[in-house]
Length: 285
Ligand SMILES: Cc1ncc(COP(=O)(O)O)c(C=O)c1O
Image 1 (cartoon, rainbow, N blue to C red):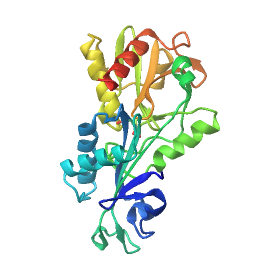
Image 2 (cartoon, rainbow, N blue to C red; image 1 turned 180 degrees about the horizontal axis):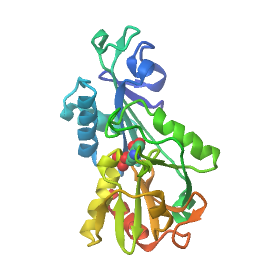
Image 3 (cartoon, rainbow, N blue to C red; image 1 turned 180 degrees about the vertical axis):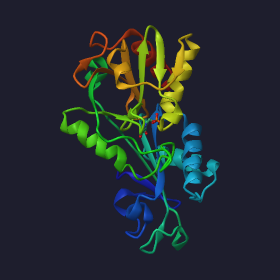
């Protein structure tokens, strides 16, 4: 059976799920999205993702044509229709079709697109061995230009940095902010551990407020581990004992090298492993 896509209130086979070439989501990257995991048929941290989606939409003055409850129902229906056990949901809201111009008043019918599919991001071995990453020359968007908290359809800032990463043979790349501090990776938040303290950039470093990030902070605090949300630099990563990334797609993945410097002993560390196990347990609750 063909993948069933939710579009404009209906479930359609993927071959029939089409939108206008005049949609401003395509013409200008004008829209918002979410990437959400499904574990054991259950949409993980659904409410948090839906809340962030509506906040992103509010920030760009995009009115989503469904209530939050209707959206949750539509996501659940799409997951069930595709018989997803463990998979991934891509929820996209576009500005809708309009004339060739930026004026949002000349657009109509924002499109709600829900794709529920399987996912495999990284080779499972990388969760054992850890990632090697580089720092991209491309800095994260200045938050005064466009807040990184908006999960918008325009990901070129991150794509530019990702190209630098893949050119260097790395699957992720670190992005700094306009002050030269560590912000996040192209599609993941970053954490370091030094002397037993977990550190991650705060939201005002100009990052996406990751839902996995928030879940991991909570798990660490519940385990009595101190978590500091503070500014830090590449140097702090070089001299850290451990480092890991979080994201809905990546989950919790260790980082063992940055820009040719081994982090700690160059192997995933004990606190990373502990938090990874706790996170895995949370996804099965
Ligand atoms: C730029 C960026 N940072 C961080 C994240 C991680 O966020 P979350 O844990 O909500 O998936 C993502 C993933 O969507 C992202 O695109």
